[in-house]
Length: 312
Image (cartoon, rainbow, N blue to C red; front, side, top):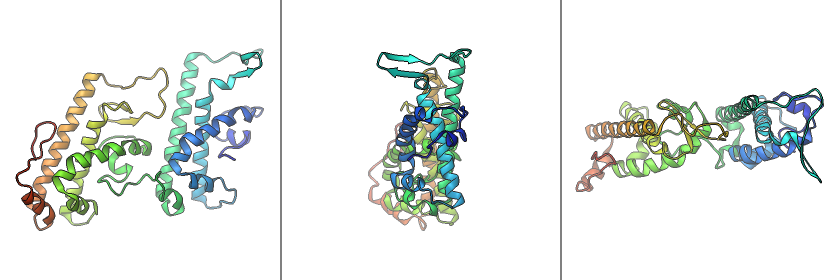
C-alpha cells in the first residue's frame, strides 16, 4: 500500500486520463515514497499515515499533501519511461494514430512543473507537521525531525529571517551539517559550551535576546559562506535552494564563479562582524555571562584567529 493507490487518487493531483493504466505509475510512486517521503517523515510516521482509520483533519491534510508530492514526483521520475514499453523484442515507444509526442520545450516545462509541485507539497506537509507537532509523535522523535534545538537557528523560519531559503525545510535540513561545523569552528572556541547553552535557552531577558539575535545572524552568514562551494545548492546573491533534482538543462548556479566568490566573501565578513558585536555585548554584561568571562580569563593567552585574519 502507498499514499496513492489507483488512478482516481492519482487524478486528484496530476492530470491523467481516466483510462490511464495506474500500474505504469506504480513503480515510480514506490520509488518516490522510498526516496523522498519516508526519509523526511520517518518509517513509523509513514506507516501510520497509510492507515485508513485516520479521522483527524490536520493529519488528513498532511496525508493529502504527501500524496500530492508522491504523484507529481512519480511523474517527474517516470516521465520518459511512461511512454516506453520493454518487450521480448526490446524497448518500444507508444505511437498512437492522430497523436503527437510532446516536443523538447514542452517536456522541459512539464518536468519542471512536476518537480516544483512535488517538492512544494512535501515542504508544505513538513510545515504542517511542525505546526501540529503533537499529532506526529513518531516524526517528532525521529531523525527526520526538522526542528533542531541544538542550534542557534533551530527552525526554518528563523534561518529564513536572515537569508532567503524560500522557507524550504529540505534546504534547512541540508544545511544542518554546515551549521554544526560553523558552531564547532567559530562559536565553541569563542563562547564555550556553558555560554552557548545560555544563549540557546531563548530567555526573555533583553541582553540574552540580543545575544541570540547576533548569534543567529552570525551563524547564518557563516553557514552561507561555507555552503557556496558545496555544489549542493543553487545560489544567487540573495537566496540558496537545495538542489533536490537537477534537470539536464539547468545551471548549477545562477551566479558566475566570480560573483559566487564575492558572495562567499561578503557573508564571511558579515558573520565575523556579528561575532565581534556578540563578543562586545558579552564583555559589557559580565553579570549575565559569567561563564564567558571566566572562560576568557582562563584562556587569555589564546587568540581566536578567523579565516579572514580577524582575531576575537
